[in-house]
Length: 102
Image 1 (cartoon, helix red, strand yellow):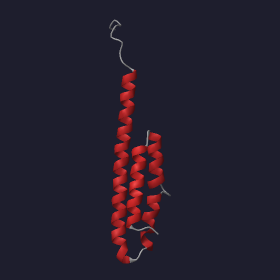
Image 2 (cartoon, helix red, strand yellow; image 1 turned 180 degrees about the vertical axis):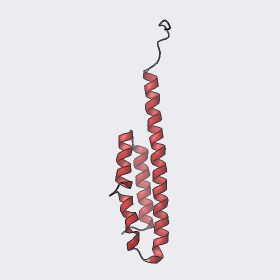
Image 3 (tube, one colour; image 1 turned 135 degrees about the horizontal axis):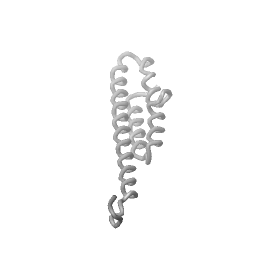
Image 4 (cartoon, helix red, strand yellow; image 1 turned 120 degrees about the vertical axis):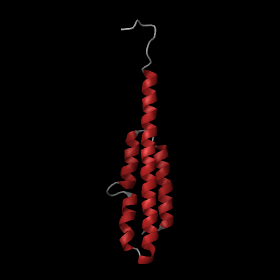
């Protein structure tokens, strides 16, 4: 059973994985590992019911915040990776200005 400290550790690991993802496929793998149907964070969210009532509120709030942070990081990582891919594509498709216009 996880606690709030474990959630913060999970958050740091997940955010590091997002930052280290070089492409869209790797970002999707990170999303599935942490937020997928049997993901690590999903399992932690399911364990809220097993906690004593006094701890549920704090743990649930922390877990939801970690989930929101991870979803935001995944969106930003996706935009970063797609932007880099677009720039690479533009760089490889430079027009030859010495050719006559059509």
